Length: 119
Image 1 (cartoon, rainbow, N blue to C red):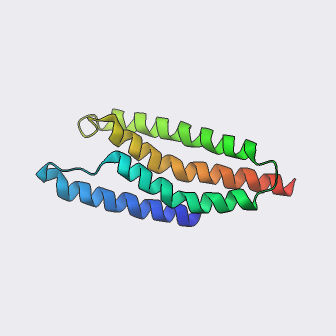
Image 2 (cartoon, rainbow, N blue to C red):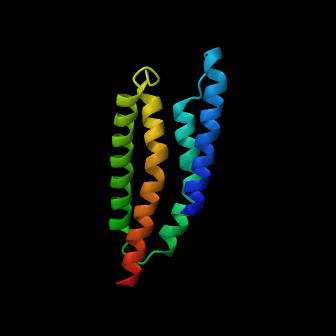
């Protein structure tokens, strides 16, 4: 889980740097590509957590997805409210929400599956 958070933080930093350099020239990174790449990075640790978890694992996956969606929507709304001029497209706000929500979803999955294994 720590590796996922670290890799996503580095990816977010690189995307922010590219956006700051490209912004004066009218180029910004595609929010969908950023969200896709961070999802692919998080799939490995998430699959390992899922395989290592005790059965039944379905409730943990549902809780993780609900956490991911909730955090993504809340952060996207906060980014849109805080930076209305910078987030003219909803895709940028959703990408930022996804970057914050993905580690939260993995953390909920790890917590839930760890609790199932104990009891």
